[in-house]
Amino acid sequence: MSANLAAPLGAMLAASALYTPQANAADVDAAIVFAVDVSASIDPATANLQREGHAAAISSPEVVAAITRNSTGCIAVTYVEWASSGHARSVVPWTSVCGLKDAQAVASIILKEGDRGLGCEQTCATSISFAIDLGCMLLDSYVGSAASKVIDISANGTNNDGLPVAVSRRRAIAKGYTINAIAIPEMILSVVYDLTEYFDNNVIGGPRAFVIAPSTTTDYAAALRRKLVAEISLSIRPPSKEMVVVRE
Image 1 (tube, rainbow, N blue to C red):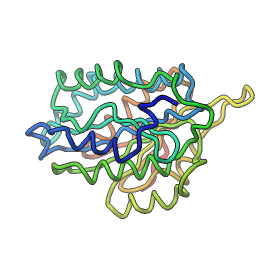
Image 2 (tube, helix red, strand yellow; image 1 turned 30 degrees about the horizontal axis):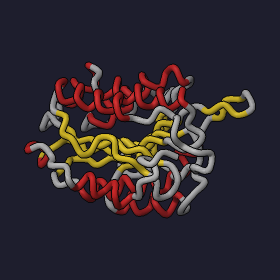
Image 3 (cartoon, helix red, strand yellow; image 1 turned 90 degrees about the vertical axis):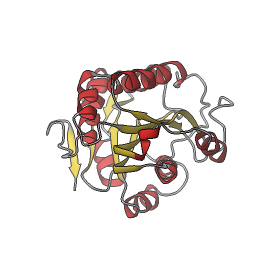
């Protein structure tokens, strides 16, 4: 595991605390935590899929349009990578996105600094419960106000480390946060393993929560783009019945 990935949660949050949010961060339509899986099951191809997919989605015309047509015309985002319980790395601290220039700046950092699937040892497990707790702590630390607060989980496996995921999910929901997810199709013994039902039953929760499940890895970026448009839009309409399971 890389030294950066192994940084303790406290150090990551301390680094985020040093960041001074933009002035307009006090009034945004949504505060979104991009919580991206970099555990041992994430190979270089999947790491690139997530990194490039998030960069393409946040800077896409559809997402920028969704941001600018809302009440304040701004969202706040942070991008964090997670694996085993206690192992996380901040890639993009809380940053206001109020248009194309801001979105492109965030995308550039994700592409430059995001995980490439080369640093996580096989002992690096998947703690979705930790990712949710991490998302809660980041949303708790956000200094501005937001009409909605979302933890956006991207992962290709089930919770196999740390607390039971139900415990962390209940805490997040109690705070009024929404947990959404994108389930990356996983190949196991040449068979595609669909995580949609697991994420629906165990991970997502809160107001208008949903999991989006691209049918193939090649559809990941497009699915994530539609997912972000749904999250940013105040009405939060599911992107399509074929790709989304909605939990009210």
